Length: 192
Image 1 (cartoon, rainbow, N blue to C red):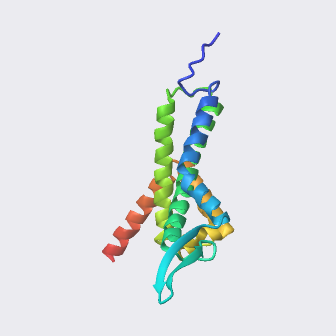
Image 2: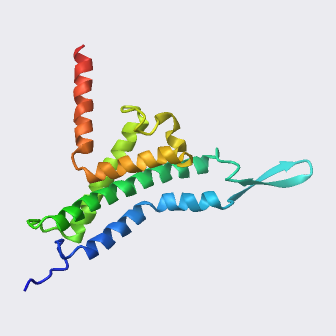
């Protein structure tokens, strides 16, 4: 009879790792969740303007004033937090499915190591988001850089970003290969 070690990832012991992976991804996604909540609720800001009658209070609703500085910053934080969350989730899904599929999974992965692997997946998703934003990769399969900061309002573009972020975490060599290809392309352009 096998004894289960609840601190190590294995074929029979994925439950605690799945829960940890989901909780870590939710924590990374909190700015995006807050953005969605705030976007659906009126958020009033009071500004006092003085005129000859005295003080007047002007009320602004962020749903009608999406160009305010605070809302732009929140939108950008929401975009990147969603990408980080999906990158971390992709890394966790990759690791957990390998552990469940393989009978020969002999890696001694702890929950702490799972979180570090998810962090690497989140970093890869962040780097890939910057690559999209910098127009280093383009095409119909990728999010359009011109609308990157408004991507949360364009469902198809947001879906593309989240799928690519998940893939950045899921496929460990995906982003490093892109960076190597960009470096080679830079070297070829400098030699010309």
